[in-house]
Length: 487
Image (cartoon, rainbow, N blue to C red; front, side, top):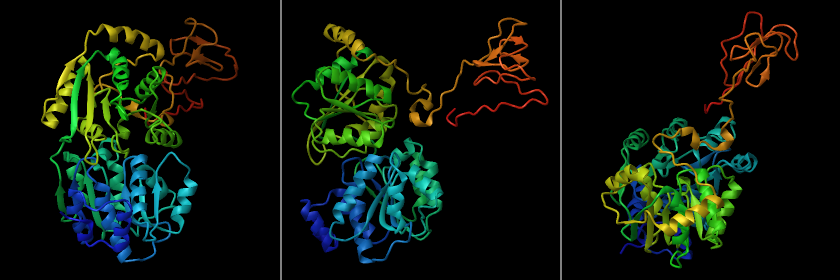
């Protein structure tokens, strides 16, 4: 049996591993560490919970410690890109733990927090930076970070980067990196776009694949329950009340849905918290801290948490709503049955989600055992109460849903889509457009035309936000209507 001591790692690293009680590497660690230590590029395919972080963190720290040199000002020697704040924090914590006896510096760069501390951390140079693409791009734009000194570039959870739309920022970041560098590319699955990106970034890479794509952990007991959409919440509360459920994650498809489910569970006497992209960093950290401390039995989350939560002893995972991307199912249920333990994954399926179920079973190459709880009278009665505790959210087919609905609220700007003038008549007075009074000679959207508006001097035209605006007349100043990029 391979031991960490057989891999040639530096003694301070072995001491840090011994302090944490680690003696034997996982399969991906045993295969990847020697390759990375030699300086080769690596393409690693392994599902969540297999020890990927240590597979690249340990040999990176070994290389940096062997060749000690100061990091450039506002720069860093190793850059690790992560899709979420939680995962970035988790990776950085692992780096710090393994580098406890090396004296190397580690910093995190992600959104949701102030820029000042991050700028100060980067000012003198850092050995290892773990960053999310968006905030790193901001620092590069502000010249508070530079990429000229990067020796090792790691792209972690590449397939989730693709799901979150980070491929373009990744390419922009990679274009600013030195050509002479080591590249490490890790992903749980390998869809076509990810393979293309790997081909662009990696040079003659070694490949390590631990499990087939889109397979699920054998230790997870999976089941499926057919249930009406409006009765999912009382069914969930019923299952969570079971004593065998010690610590669980409940996955929803939308942010509002996560909040509503958490609200209902709390009202039902089950301690719960929600976590998603609209939460502030402080709210997310407090929810995770309460979950890790056992103060919360159920953490209700969107897919942002599918790979960013490293919490031991999660006994159950509930797919309250099936994901619209089949591979996400594997990442969700991978939150349980970690470190050799068993776990349970229960999925709910309403009639509108049968096509999603079919895609999941095709991708995972298995038939999930199912049970039918439709037309359950007890759940029907509980559902009536549930609507009073937390009104149900109308189901929207994710394949037909507007992608703008998943944009964080701070990026959205309200726009009056019903704007339009309301002239009283063909020759009415004070015609209005978009809720604004026309000044002087006004013209509303509905043909209302009048003289002597509220402010009444000169000529003007109502520019309704979202209304019908055909342009100004000559000599008349145009009223600018600002449109959100999201729209």
